[in-house]
Length: 111
Image (cartoon, rainbow, N blue to C red; front, side, top):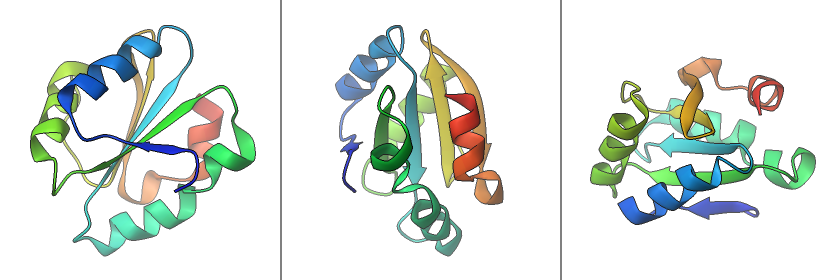
């Protein structure tokens, strides 16, 4: 998980969203009980170290931190899904994709 920051609190979400006014951020909401989520994670885990130096990437274990996951959905006005990528710019969700839509190119094209 090199380069990915782990989210464990609502306060960290607020700090990340605030940082999105300076540069894009990416949330990955991961279910440790879902094989599709694991497949999506394996596709994207290396994006940060390989291709984007100006974006912060955040990993959330939504099973362990369901309250944080719910807060992200509410704060950014997106439906909760798992797995889910949410790209945030200037405090607003600009991309919300899930399941098999989660591809490195889709993320890189939108940050």
